[in-house]
Image (cartoon, rainbow, N blue to C red):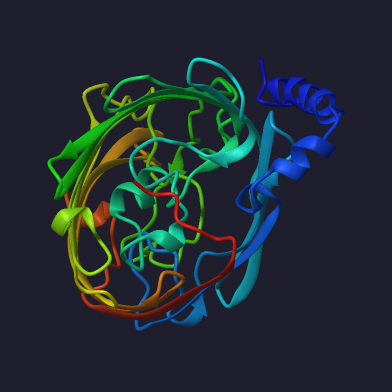
Length: 396
């Protein structure tokens, strides 16, 4: 079954439901649920592009978009997002979201179909303009292309418990994660995810998540590159390091006096991912892994300061040509470490001016087969994000 089949079925269902008389429903619909539009602009000046980063050196646009969302009727809602950014001094655009979602299924069930961001991990399903740092953690940039959205179908169940408990399952075509796949591989990517959370008294709350991704699409082997050919300016939105299975665990803790985060708040976020079975022709014991720990302190209603440290260890499968022994598949080991500190000024919930310093260091198992050849020893970014209209945050 391809990803288009459930979309056709749900489109037919949407058409049927949209024929339901809407006059009474429209009169009683709160303004917040009617169709709304929004725009986000993310402009930044970067002293040097980061390894696995998505921003050009100099002035450019980051993840910006135009949004339209609302409810068709009491049964269905939808959202469409057209994203745009600059890459290599050129303006690029893409259809990021185009989905339809149920609103009235019983027993806490919800179904979404179309193009949307996967729920894997903590940050991926959130809009990038709500992030606390100028670039997403290495975990997302290496294994999910920064912000993985795809064409597919999702089903969530929210349990009727006194604490938050959500179970989800997704089926995608996978072409946004792995655009090119070998002829022998399948054409499906599935995810399973669990979210659970609760309050801890009046001052703090927590949320823990566990996700698993199963990938049938196998990337073709890359030709071995000579050392010194870095990837700091590679703006591909696909995963750079893939495998058949990825597991992600994330934990978020938030504290604010009496639960009021307007004047003061502390946010701590930890994530860990492991990717196994990275290529059929390599040793099955080889894995990718990445971790991220970050903390942000809102010490004034308009000011925040944050720190984050990331570490990624990968094994890159490459095809090596040898005149004596013929072609051979080898794994090149690499480790990339990244530290960031930022200061953000937020005069309103829809404006952010951020100054960030990022440092990177790389270690390769073999200097002749370098995976990370051009890390940014120091990169300074000045970022301004402004949102207009109905562009709110969808974060825990």
